[in-house]
Amino acid sequence: MFQEIIDAKKRLQGFAHQTPVLTSRSLNKMLGAEVFFKCENFQRIGAFKFRGAFNCISQLSETEQKRGVIAFSSGNHAQAVALVSKLLGIKATIIMPSNTPQVKLDATRGYGAEIVIYDIQSEDREIVTAKIQNKHGYTLIAPFNNKHVIAGQGTVAHEFLEKIPNLNTLLVPCGGGGLLAGSAVAAKGVNKNIRVIGIEPELADDAKQSFEAGKIVTIPVSNTIADGTRTTALGHMTFPLIQQYVDEICTTTEQAIIDAVKFFLLRMKIVVEPSGALGLAALLSKSVKAQGKVGVIISGGNIDPPVLKQILGE
Image: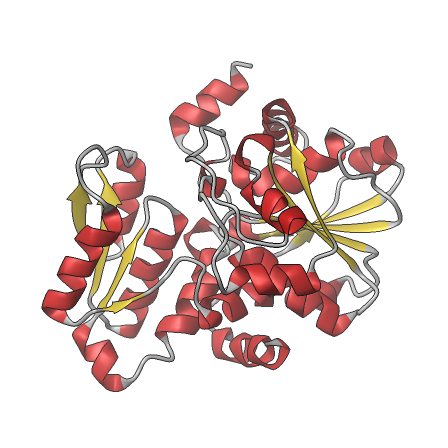
């Protein structure tokens, strides 16, 4: 998988942004460590998902590209698949739930994708997707359970360690596990001694439960503010990689996530969505002790305006 990440990095050149690494002197002083943030909120579509989508879709056969692609998502994956498809001249159909915020519908449609809305109360997104996929022969682009998607996401950590090679620890947000799995493989491939820690909300701790149980644990859909982590289980491709390459999975509180989003906005002047703020939340709440040089991946910055209003009102 490490070689696939290197190959993905070459494939992404000229398409994905090399996102900046930022620091905060006041935070370093507060924590007694050096903290470096890899800012995927500055990536195309505002999140790391562009990397995996591009690496996957760009490798489809000519026949598959002519037929088109399909994906189900209400968030960053939807926008990533839509933009990549536009760049490569491929038809994209995105299945989105009826409660998707208008800002996300507009963004996805703005990238040229056809949107199909399903009723979350009466319809199953996978059944809706399968019907359309089978009718048109579209290729499904999975949000995390796909080796090309995982390899694309791993380029985040590889890029990070090229810039800051002597990190002791790497903190990575975890939803379905694509970013965590890819980043862990990349990080250990560069430095076998680096400690890789996955971070998820206490309210959505399926990865932590799975990691400790040694098998995939499925939980109900969470109401955590970190909406990008509301997946109910890790994928059968992401879980073995996480088992093999990740050292620990920690959780953080809703209040710590809110505090982290506020810190980014008010102190560092950057917009970070709650899912992207998990690493800082873990440091602020002391669920992870900051020591030496700590790398934190900010996964994205696509925060819904009502959520931002709610956070600022806290």
